[in-house]
Length: 169
Image (cartoon, rainbow, N blue to C red):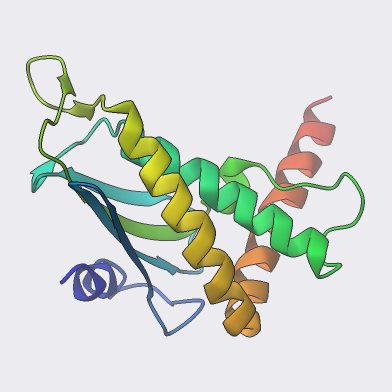
């Protein structure tokens, strides 16, 4: 399944955590499943599918993942005293070194454009956001070492970006 696919995509990289985070859920006739693993690299690798069709330009399912991931990491960091005050991490920081596979199934997929490169169904964003928020928060509570490793990577990315900005100014 997509867990093995995520592991395969990371085969030439050093993983930050051995366990692949697997999230899945359904609401009505729509379902979503995700596999996430971080590595020590700096690139974001996000593969998304809607009804087994690759969506290279992303769409609402990717937006839901990105929003929820950022929120969950910030909430976990604040709750556990890892992030101090207003020192939140951005979405870009949270996705540095991520390998994520997202696959959604829905009955009336609405693609934007002729090439079916981007999914436009707004309700799928809500579904993905909800299941990622709930299940990733639970995963982080049950696996604090993995959560800390991911959050430290995001905080380092944040510091590096801030230092680069300072150097430019």
